[in-house]
Amino acid sequence: MARPLRIEYPGALYHLTSRGDGQEDIFLDDADREEFLSVLASVVERFGWRAYAYCLMDNHYHLMVETPQANLSKGMRQLNGVYTQRVNRRHSRVGHVFQGRFKAILVDKQNYLLELSRYVVLNPVRAKAVKDPGRYRWSSYRATVGEVSPPPFLDTAALLVQFAATTPAAQRRYRAFVLEGSRVPSPWTEVKGQVLLGREGFLRKVNPKLKSTRLAKEIPKAQRHAGRPSLTQALKNLRPGDEHTRERLITTLHLRHGYTQAEIGQATGLHYSTVSRIVARQIRARNKT
Image (cartoon, rainbow, N blue to C red):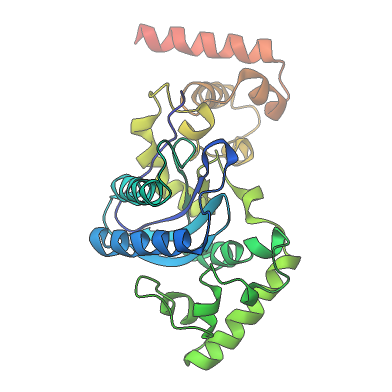
């Protein structure tokens, strides 16, 4: 079974989801939802997390959390494990509640915190459970706009401070920002390698953290190479006629960054067999040195 890539470091921001085993519901009633939020509160306190947004749907949940310490996996084991124990005991059953491992997308906080927080609380609207996110009880939206008191684990100030200096003004602008979200493209179209959401500067920053994972064959290839440069970016400064540099770059793109020879050929205008010969020639040259 493929093992999902986990990139953990102090100060990382994640969008987290877990789904029900066999697509079954993970929350059977409101008492289950209250139980989950209780477990989440204890995990946030124990592991020092900062929770910015959440939404509990019937068969899955969404969380936006920052980990000041590199302890995402430990915290998620506690969250899903303790909730499973409690809900199974409450309903007199045994077995899995969640399907496989949780999904974590590492997020560029500077550019995507607000966008992803908006995406999270709009889930009930997209699912047609409600027309207005304020009508949905089991998300962080109502607490952030001031309709209900926020739970102790929820950091509403971190979002609101980015809209205005005073809380009432910030809440009004946040409300408008969320309602505009139904008219903007989904941020998931910009996810790289299934695990990274960020701009080029962020990708360059986290790329060194991916190097230790690239040889882990049980991790899906797309995730191992999530932080690699795009072919367009890698080739843009290549000077015409500089064959030596071009061949070295082609070899690096194939061997280090995992692009197929066909992908490189399409980007460079070369036949994949030509790319294959270039890579083979470069490998022979390296072995001689």
